[in-house]
Image 1 (spheres, rainbow, N blue to C red):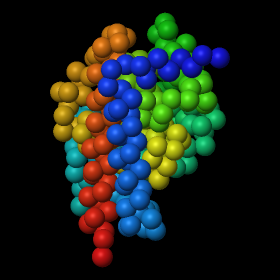
Image 2: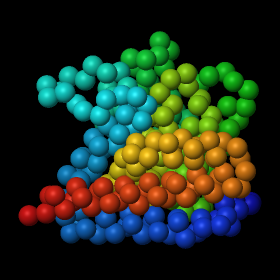
Image 3: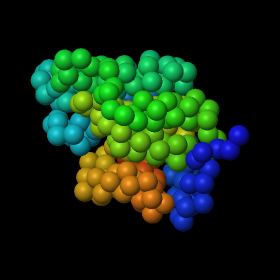
Length: 241
């Protein structure tokens, strides 16, 4: 059968951007600290990713000194980050179940009925297609599938609340499951926050469905992966004896 995402590799600049992103993440895994002490980098990356993801959606970036997080967006993002490892097998087998669970965690303090997608025409069908891609329906490189998962969930906004936190968490799960970032060391969410206007513009471009719009989004996502790798390298460098 024809790979539905294969034509995206013919878009201008995409193969090169994908290769650069993949190489940047690979090099972080080869950092001497991460060869043995990668769990420390992954733990710090998880917290930074959760804080940045929450901040993109209007939450605070700082966790109170006493650890009691009152803000519902940040609290939800931290719950999601903590659960990603447990949810990975579900994401690989039944992505829609994983998305529902991600939303329950992200929106527990925001939505009276979390975990249920909105009843909007076309949403269920596109979610089914996305699930097909995640479970083996494409063989494109990891960075490209990460971009599609992230962009499609943002474009669909399948839930009433917390779609951003859910989409960025699904992108992290895709990075892990494709083998792009198996130890989840990168922090691409930081660039989404730092360049929020570019992030929103690229998302809008993706939602148009035009080749130019999709190209703009994929290139931006590859930039976030490279930036996230630099963030991870900084974490590892700080842990170097």
